[in-house]
Length: 181
Ligand code: GDP
Ligand code: MG
Image (cartoon, rainbow, N blue to C red; front, side, top):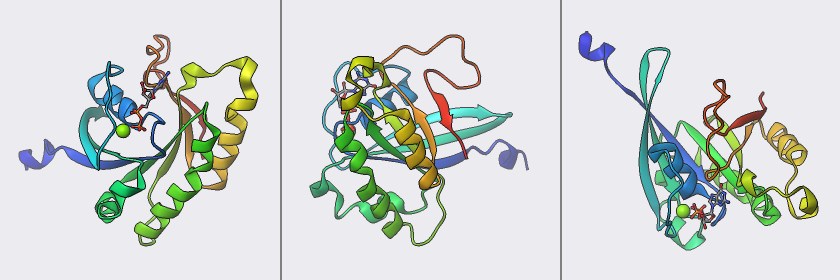
């Protein structure tokens, strides 16, 4: 019984989105607590673990940091979605092309999740690069929120780079809940 009580539950978290949106930096930040000094393009998939304790229960997140490039995906994609617990759809708030690219990622998820309802999150990364004078070149929070709502997702805006805010305890680090179902 005691081994059952101390058992650590593992959740598989799939991180997807266009190349360059910051998937590797985000997962590195989550698991190593820092923005990586140097980051190389992901080939196939990288795995990182993050241990948490929620209400006294030990939890392990196993993050699957995938490569955005089509050529790496074909043979791997079914493995990505097998037994997945949650999917993070990442875009870059300063790159509308990466936001438009989400539709294809959502379709990939739909095709490979075989009708399972997987909790999904929309992540607008690089919030530190938001420039109030260049709103035409950015994806607004309103747009991202309505997209999240339309697709039954929870939206967070993140920065893998900016230091965590000290005053927040409800949201860890630099994340803010902008839209929640
Ligand atoms: P991936 O292809 O989605 O894995 O993207 P990477 O994690 O490799 O990041 C691509 C580039 O964006 C790198 O040059 C990172 O330094 C940069 N980057 C990633 N996240 C952030 C962020 O939150 N803020 C800023 N300013 N740059 C970021
Ligand atoms: Mg990467």
